[in-house]
Amino acid sequence: MKLAKADIYSQASSIPAVKFEEQQLTSFAGLIVFQKLFESGRLRERLHEACAHLEPRHYYSFSTILQCLIVHIVLGCRQLRESEFYREDPLVKRVLSLKSLPSVPTVSRMLSEFDDQSVAAQQAVNRDLVLERLQKEALHTVTSDFDGSVQSTKRHAEGTAVGFNKEKKGARSYYPLFCTVAQTGQVLDVLHRSGNVHDSKGAVEFVTTCVKSIRERLPLARLEVRMDSAFFSDALVGRLEQMGVEFTLSVPFERFTELKSMPFASARLARCSA
Image (cartoon, helix red, strand yellow):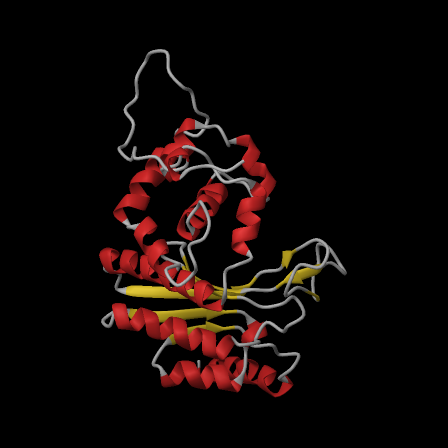
């Protein structure tokens, strides 16, 4: 069934007031907080700019589809078909400025039209939002945690591969690398990877990009990096020292047996000196 834009988009954008009278009920009243957050961060405008190069040939805009996905995740949903649980909720529609939410086939079809430029633009929007918050917090120290996370999938999703997966052995998966700001818990950036790569795949370049983006916005802050032993390498250690970043990096003694004797030798020397 074809719809006119007047049947899709809503002009209502003000924060609804609580009224103790007969009215439409919602199970998602907490979305009011996110509605204000989206407005203050100019999320709709930024998403629209990121998708400006895509051909607008659908009833729904690409930025609207992205905002629907954000609300979908905020509500705790993971699969697209779960949107049926809140399709007619009045507050969800109001937050999205819609009269009618897009169907699952519409969302899936429009997502398939996103290209690499769109993905890069969305990542830039996310980085800017996080960095703006860090600037407002005026942190003296910014600690970046880098870690990979196995994301299992079903069937043969594009870009997946069989790799390390301790929960579902043999399942196809992604293995993205996340950069998380320890002080705020926000994800600054993510490096998308297939499930059959090593933890350190692309790590040096990714860490460099994240550190530089933070330093550009907070030039006076002390930067710290925390990583586990899977990322240990001469190239990474050298890059961190070159950038003047303080770091904590676990050492895999099973791969560098010559290093194992060094802390024990230091301990014996300290006892002898005492």
